[in-house]
Amino acid sequence: MTDWTNPPTQEVGHLTSVADLNTYLRDNLKNIYERITGPFPFNLDPRNFHNVTQTLVATTTYYGRTRGVGAVDSVAFRVQTAAGNVSVALYDNTGSGRSARPNTRLQTSGSVACPAAGSADVALGGTTTITAPCAHWLALSCSGAPVLLGTGSNPVDSSLGSGLSYREAVHPAPATATATPTAIIAPPMLIGA
Image (cartoon, rainbow, N blue to C red):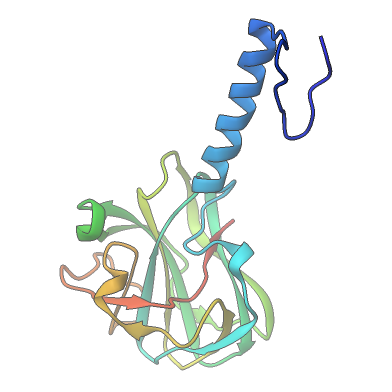
């Protein structure tokens, strides 16, 4: 049998064992699953980070639906200019598709001083294991108007964000998200750590 190429290719007359085929299928399906879900919880794929500044609105909570799975005991983000206090939280989900939205807060940091410029990792009040993509929401609220490094322009109200990202005028992150949050595009990038 000839060696596998990377990526694997087949030649006419090439014999493949069942074990080799199963390994090939398993590895490719795992790769596809990780590209969709990610290796850890996040709301925006960190590979799309563009080093663009975003000024957040004071007294606002921003929600991002998680992709990826894993244990979450903190929320990471990148601060360009610190301002006021922040609160990070993890919420469960209600609804599906474009009607999905954050529901009940599962963990929170409470209101803490906004971290200094640089990479920030704010601890939640405990650990939650996310076992399915899109089943939870990461949240960041702020009392001031910090500037973060993100993936796009400032968050903008738009129904295009329905089911993916929202905001509501409240700080710190509430025990229950509003039933009618405002859909946004270009939310802050949050990573469950």
